[in-house]
Image (cartoon, rainbow over all chains, first blue to last red; front, top):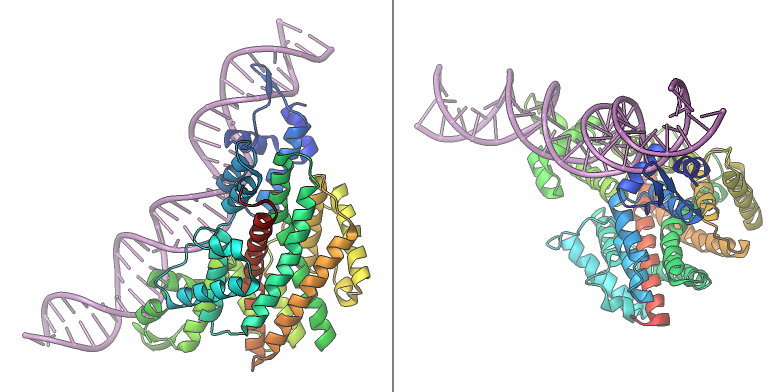
Length: 214
Length: 214
DNA sequence: GTGTTTGGATAGTGGCACTTACCAAGGAGG
DNA sequence: CCTCCTTGGTAAGTGCCACTATCCAAACAC
């Protein structure tokens, strides 16, 4: 498959594919001669993953490169490989540790993990970007003067745990380690927008049920 | 409160506040004379909401302006007001209706809503951005060659429905209509990153439980 | 052999979230 | 009164980023 065909089958312009090649998001094709390179189904697959990450997941190009680097790193064990890929994903601003809301959010998040009995996650609080994102969101919520009982957060966490179990079950069905890591990334990048969409659809549905269309 | 104090209390630079005022994200202060304007707690509150939307929710400035316009529109009924605000939020690429994966995703999403009995949401499929986002994510997933049984999606939707019910319960505790709409926006913008963070933390926890840290 | 296609390099584009530099009007101190 | 600092407002600039347009020389197609 030539670059032009890769472009046609993926719906991505040739110029953009060249850009991805330059940026290292796509491995180079098999060079046939100075003016021809051959691409295969694996390139198409990777290109689609890259597009999904950038367009659906809104992941910056530099981050995509980093994530895929971990996905392709055969030297890592599974948890580390998947973890490294997922940890490279988030684009969370560093919380300002001097802010009182941020410190309160830290305490709240720690209490939550303790109550849930998520001991492994609890050990990773200093380094996990997901934990940082939780803290930032909690702090912003409180800063707006909103409050809710801790129980609600626990219930939400349990819901997401169920979703995560399903994702890992799905990941386990993939044959190779690299594909498992790739499936984990796809889960993070595509399942989350899906959940977000379902959340808003559910809000629309329930809102219409409660109040009608007015 | 002067602009400088508003800046200090919010942690947002004076230049940025001026920029938000110019862009209509923040209502102008009470003009005392040509060189002095007075801001109040409501401005601080709104500024924090704007920051949360932009920094935590990654909402573009133009979109924030549009969303807040709906939140402040007293002429709308509650469902419409909340709906208008939430519908202005997403930044979803238009799905390419000629793509076979997109058409399949449409069928899948419609079937899902039917199975769930979400009749109100079903009526809105042509216009709801959340529906479009679901279709785009589903299509991307299938394009990657991934598949799962329809039951999994139904289960996920039911999880998100539970979360949405809790959000609306919370929204109902707000006193005024404008604050209800604001709470709905905060739910969408802050709860969703929170759920995402919990999802990834749950993945980390369950992954470590299954495979250890290796 | 002539026109088209190929992959690769370089520079440019447009959007966006700020930021900097500047301005005239007020107020404070002398 | 004059001087100097502060204030809010405006216009232009910055830096980043995801492309995209333009070239180019080397194959290939007929």
